[in-house]
Length: 208
Image (cartoon, rainbow, N blue to C red; front, top):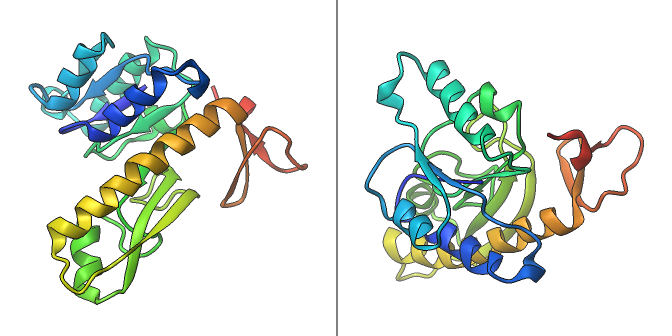
């Protein structure tokens, strides 16, 4: 299951990867928080079911989160991927499924919606992208994988973000494929691929 809010380039990378049976995962549905976006069109072209759950159609964010969880549950996913989904998920979703997100910085540095701008403003020479599990905070979940991207002297926000997104798409596909094929386990904030865990670890099998 993939959630989108915009153009869906990360979604397209997942759809392309899932076309190969060796990838080990399929996109069972695509959900969005608004109509008329390219991400939904990409799913429809790939014959993947879609749905929209708008925040404005619900009295509270909790009600929206519950409605979103109900729609996700219809497709019985093992994993939810937030691929450019620009809404904070609540407990109705997060308590029911493991959720994977990408972020255009090397967390915990530069969390939030303006990560690329913030990294440039700070003057870092290296930034990158992070694939992480989602928790109740903003970009605070356990890190699964990261990759660095050098900041060039001539970079502006657009050029740097485009290079990060290229790495981000590849890293997301790699992580989702490995999670599907190998499973994972966690201990504290450490996420490891594979179903062989030590006492005290949380394994994939304990997730719905």
